[in-house]
Length: 212
Image 1 (cartoon, rainbow, N blue to C red):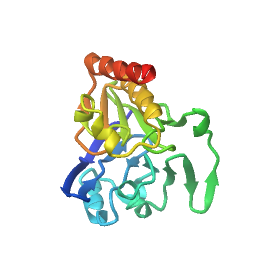
Image 2 (cartoon, helix red, strand yellow):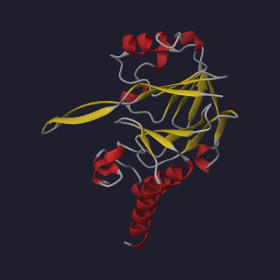
Image 3 (tube, rainbow, N blue to C red):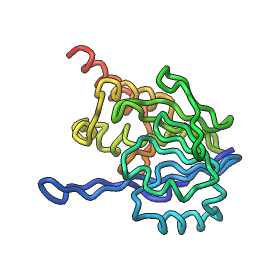
């Protein structure tokens, strides 16, 4: 089975009219396959190495690197992990070998019985979410910028203003992921627990968008 360890919580704060300070959540999955999800900015390599060492993991022990999408704050240290297979959005590769997987047709990528990668386009058209079943039978969705942070449940403008290439798809995938997850690790905030109230709110928002 698996353990999910959030190494760093993401954040996003406006610091001026046309400027923000931001970094993504970075998450380690420990199990039969060791996985790191979203590797922060290119200036964070030592932070990641130190955080992994605290969990007795070295970069060469990582089997998969998953970037939920290709924005720079989510891929900055992928090159630390040269023995891993890399999944960046819908792209799957190892060294110079690329593998076709039909994410665009809605098909999940199964790493093992406890870890899968599902397509969740919206923020970008090739976003993915990592679904993990943990040792204590809890389902964690590492969702990248599908969810900006917990506050965007009640205030959708937070994820819309963060950028969405397809808001309708994003809304549908937010509800879909919440229906299956107990916890969500968002792109730019601490992980949060999913409640029935949250699921109802997301379904209501999706219905309102469909009618508009």
